[in-house]
Length: 328
Ligand code: MTE
Image (cartoon, rainbow, N blue to C red; front, side, top):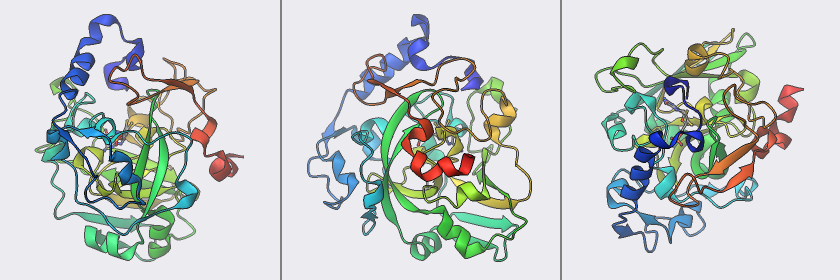
């Protein structure tokens, strides 16, 4: 991302490559085998982890088994296998906890219990939920979604959560509400950020959607992943998932949702409006100012980012049938 003014990883000069290579070699010391996928329901995509190796330290960061969320058959097959959790849960962007992809350990400082999510602004029924309210009030389901980062890497992730439109129905936005602002947790005593020289960033991390985007069938709040509650590195206890948009639109660890009349300021768009648009739909024909978006690399096909399989990027990340109508 713009913080480091660098192109996507595989375009990095050789001098910058070593840390990433070392990272993956370290991760190769796999200490445990998740043999039977204990705790995962057979029908669950969490079961895709059955034969995957998982580092024991990483495993200790994973959440509690989430049972009873059935796989939504409309979102069960994205034409690619789910990314092994070993990769998806150890290769993250969470700038509150560091500027590298290797933040899964430092993110464990995030305090998630108790958690309160305030929904406010232009709504008839403002509400504050704790996590039990959210998981008991809204029916949880599992959805396998493609995930495409603006940095041109991609994954396939089995999320568990509920559609955003269910929360909208509960709070009843007024006709004056045109946009929605999502704010992430931020406490400077807990979040070191990406480095000493980069303290003056527009925290908290915020993102935004139009009300129509939030009401779309695809827009999802995740409270779990790979059959368990979200680990902190993925944005516990609740994060946004909007799979037709670049990954930075999916704010993690949300504490506040505001329904507003005007387009809200958002984190990356405030930092670099020419590089990170508010809309940020996945569009292969629209290059990032510093790299092409025509192709993407699938995380986890090997341990080296230089050998990650390259695939063409698809308009709206393959979700055109759901969202093309929003952008006539
Ligand atoms: N949310 C917060 N609060 N802070 C962040 O740094 N990074 C974004 C998004 N949400 C980010 C965030 C970016 S750039 C990406 S690509 C995704 O989270 C990464 O999600 P993942 O680590 O769960 O794969």
